[in-house]
Amino acid sequence: MLGAATTPAEARAAFRGGAVRPTAGIAAGYVQCNLLSLPAADAFDFLLFAQRNPKPCPIIEVLEAGQLESEVMPGGDIRRDVPAYRVFRDGELVDEVADVSEVWRDDLVSFLIGCSFTFESALLDAGVPVAHIDQGRNVPMYRTNVPTRPAGRFSGPLVVSMRPMPAAQVADAVRITSRYPSVHGAPVHVGDPAAIGIEDISRPDFGEAVEIAEGEIPVFWGCGVTPQAAVMASKPEFAVSHAPGHMLITDLKDSDFQVP
Amino acid sequence: MLGAATTPAEARAAFRGGAVRPTAGIAAGYVQCNLLSLPAADAFDFLLFAQRNPKPCPIIEVLEAGQLESEVMPGGDIRRDVPAYRVFRDGELVDEVADVSEVWRDDLVSFLIGCSFTFESALLDAGVPVAHIDQGRNVPMYRTNVPTRPAGRFSGPLVVSMRPMPAAQVADAVRITSRYPSVHGAPVHVGDPAAIGIEDISRPDFGEAVEIAEGEIPVFWGCGVTPQAAVMASKPEFAVSHAPGHMLITDLKDSDFQVP
Image 1 (cartoon, rainbow over the protein chains, first blue to last red):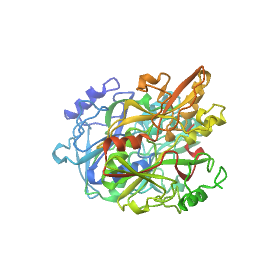
Image 2 (cartoon, rainbow over the protein chains, first blue to last red; image 1 turned 45 degrees about the vertical axis):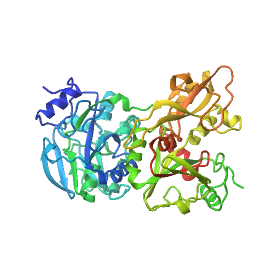
Image 3 (cartoon, one colour; image 1 turned 90 degrees about the vertical axis):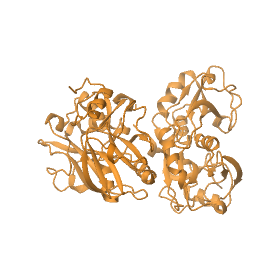
Image 4 (cartoon, each protein chain N blue to C red; image 1 turned 180 degrees about the vertical axis):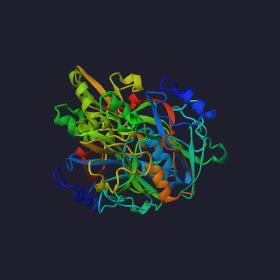
């Protein structure tokens, strides 16, 4: 039974064994990562894209071509330890599978990208509400009209996640999340959705809508779906990502990513 | 006359015109950068090396192959705007010149790497002494026995800079520099030089020795000479760097690199 007390190694083994489910709430206190695997020929351009867009694309770890595990997932197998994967060809989503061993290529470089699950625990610990958790939904995510900084062949829109906050707690949310620069850090936008090209806050592009109570302000953070949006916009010949919400669970601790 | 009030653009123009001198004290408040230019074939490995070793190799900006200026040095020319360059072939230092236009290659990717000049101003503002400035010397730098995290073809020892502090001010130095993670951040080591393989603190491997007063503790930070040590250890076929102390002056402000 996968839950908060499951260890990262146990969770990875369960997913390798065929379990498919979202990873929210599993292995509490451990860092979960977005995944993007690309051919080596595209790896410099993407690493530079991430370097130039650190808020949506904070790099936690890179597995070089031929490398299937690393010290952040000892004994793991990047082709099988994520509960569900997406496969892209020429920027088109062509498949969603529980194991990518069969389509894996020896030239794939894998980027592990920070996830906001890490700072959500810190928000909750500080008494700042996280609406989508309270409402039992996936976090709402939106494509914005804010361009990322391009790098080589990669470009695309900034994707943001949104958490509504009582106005009096916006400052706390900024202060707390700014202490986690490696997992999206401080918000990229506070308030008016229209100013970043979001026409209808009740219709997210990814995830699920949440109720926004009277007096709450929408607060927006850079989102780890931005790399998938860049793949769709930039059309590399081949790419593999995690399926939204189905993350790689690492042995790294959330607390390791807090800065003073 | 180059000095604290010189603008970054004026300084770059002077160096492009042939001036050769160390950049300490020029264009106060603006970020100065270490430079490493490598063939595109080595660029992914080096960017990953920097990503894995952010304390000695904090990337401020990357100029892609064919790109000679960027928004951090508008109107600039990376081949001519650094006061002095070093040229490496197969890891050997083969030349030191004021202009690398003649040996430049269209496939070179240029990495601009943060420099501790940024946090030294913050230390001085807070009343923490910086010995090498007080003593009118170049900062002392040491090769350690601490390995960097390798990436692709790049590996090598961590190089550190050292600033001695009165014991009562060590905590302030840690606190202040930890707010500048993009320019080496918090110290990597405090105290005992022998513990990181430094046999004689009075004989630095780069720069100049400074006097350490009775009761002062040596404090060590990751150093931007680490990439040059990696070039020497890893022997890429071609590389260009700045000459130590002769940095690229950018239009970025030191204050932009402070985190809360």
